[in-house]
Length: 232
Ligand code: ATP
Image (cartoon, rainbow, N blue to C red; front, side, top):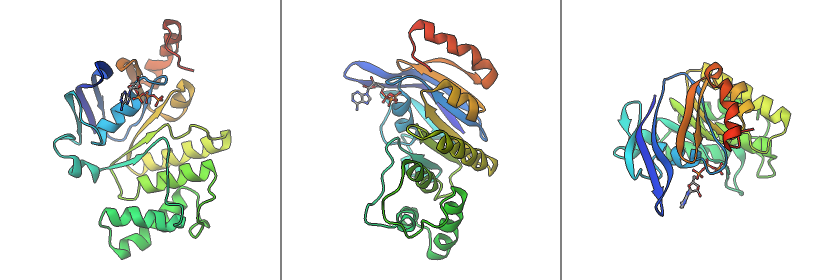
């Protein structure tokens, strides 16, 4: 589903992502783990085609992102770390807006939007304008990431700032999303978090891949703390 070949992004002479080689098969709930500044967001921005690699390449479903950004956009749902909505629109209208951007017709929108709001546990807030709690924002952000029925969703730190109940709910929703056949890439700086939700993960530090593998393979990676990599 995702392949990175020597993916590198350099800012001002410093590599934010450094020679990253990674393969993520379809159906995985894959964690991208690393401390602040490890290069997780930069990797994600290259995967969704928002920034171009300095060198190397990344592929979604075998399609090179930098050369086919529009085609790739239709296969990916993305939720940024700071999820934002149009403050004067209802929850439903926010999703409607995104659906229209993907060219979804009215009949499709009428079916898909209530289904998604229900999946993320937001039945009843269709008409609410703003005033969403952090948990509601994350749920609505996930619904929006799924609007185009993508084969891959990429979530940047989706559980940051959620309370334990919000985290538990989020885990359940991500699990259900994967059960429906969507591959999930989720970034986090909390090892235990990734351990609980992901089937496999990669650890980044200072832009480089430190380790990757299944949950069991990575259990020993917590010892990386001793090398100064602040994974909690
Ligand atoms: P965080 O969890 O704090 O968001 P991260 O793992 O997502 O961390 P990135 O945001 O990818 O890390 O940042 C990796 C490095 O690249 C950092 O040192 C950051 O300062 C640098 N960086 C990211 N974007 C830019 C930019 N637009 N210009 C210059 N440097 C950047």
